[in-house]
Length: 205
Image 1 (tube, rainbow, N blue to C red):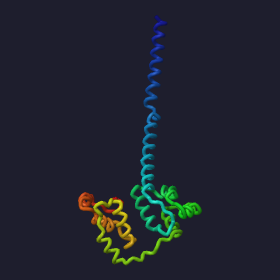
Image 2 (cartoon, one colour):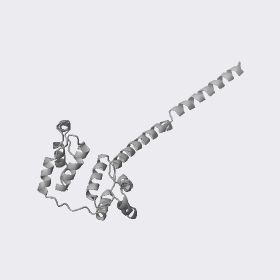
Image 3 (spheres, helix red, strand yellow):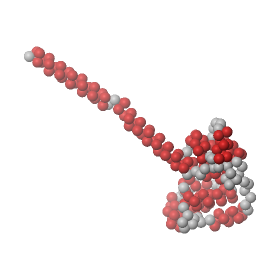
Image 4 (cartoon, one colour):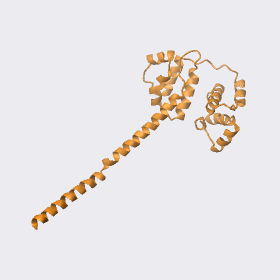
């Protein structure tokens, strides 16, 4: 009986020991690490996708007489802001949008710029934009008359009117520009946007 009793006790001991370690592994803090890692990876994928979409939306700059560095930088900034691309990501990838003479310049001037604005100032000095000589009264009239075409996309309309606004007043406030953008939309789109009370061009986009 004692032997049988000891045998039963040993079985009970090993069963409890196994159960103990099974519970410990079940409640171990490390058990949640794969979930956390997956969440982090998912966040990185989402951010990476936004950055890729931003750069895909930017046209290449070649550095020819047909290119306007000021307009190109303005448009790039609008896209970067819309996709929440920070300065570090802007500067690390901007070279892929430069070709021909512009790429040659970039290759020879790859220094730490610190901020996007520092890069932009250096870039615009290397590729000076033409002076704005258009009659401001004429530009103002063009802005007031500019309406979205029946088959014109919102993006094309936005960039066309944004360019006119910058030509008229480079320091035009965000709210003034937004009012003009909304005012020129097709009626069916304007009706949907007005209740949203957008305040900035980024919100408009």
